[in-house]
Image: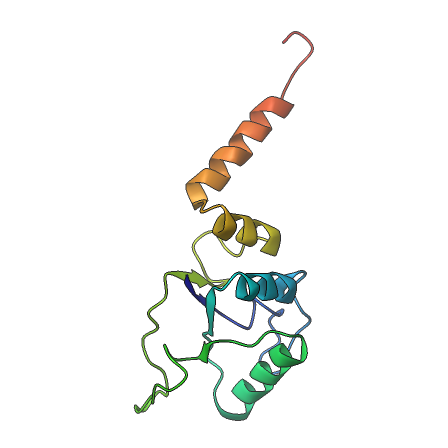
Length: 136
């Protein structure tokens, strides 16, 4: 699967233009996804030196992306913005509707092909099981 992953607020806490602390289990999960042969694209607003710092930060932790802000490593992004439209099957971004789930849940969703609806259904079922009163 081709997965586009945001950097600030997703892999690390928001501290742009600095690099924030790693969000728990982000790089561990990304390394597992790479090992399972998913193609990860770093998809971020960072450019120039700030982008290089983010890529290096990830490499130092064992996360090397298939491509950065483009679909293929050899793609030449030749426009004013420096970005191309990413063709991914999944986007992991803290700005998703519903926010960013924890990285364990993200891995579970990808590994077991679960949707948001599956996750929320599981949570509703767990909540109903826990709500037992005195008489029932």
